[in-house]
Length: 112
Length: 111
Image 1 (cartoon, rainbow over the protein chains, first blue to last red):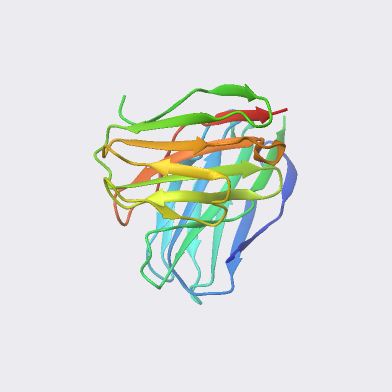
Image 2: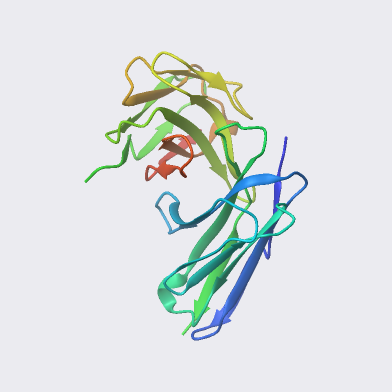
């Protein structure tokens, strides 16, 4: 089935550093979502993007809908220990379906 | 608080046993979904529903059945559990365009 390539798979960073991760697709998407999952919990929506080039922030998080409509990026500035978790991208293609495809996740660990 | 509630949170089954996972949402969302999450595989769609009385197959439907008799509830059934169905199961709901709201998951182990 259709898949999203999400990278990196995992990363260890020092507290205070900035973080970048991305997702790419083989098809054009009309919506990109970014979720965070804490241990033992379900994913929680962080940012939703609905048009190419859109740049949206949520506190220290900023996400962008790629111009090609085949990719999206998430940046976290000045990371803190509570940023630890798994970050998922999800996308919906232009066929009009309401179903989202999820990336395999980026596992983030922050070293104090 | 409004949201998606999943029961049970944990369950251990023997191979061949059956069980039903319940998902309830109080946000009046039309769409509901069941996903399974396995290490390194991300979230994979099992079944989904676009409204009361409707269900459809997702990416990995084999071995599962679902029912949506009421708009707020979406049930996932395992008729004859297999070790390959050991996973964490997430239910989600959504209005049309917006993103999903997920439940907190059910951790199922089949021995």
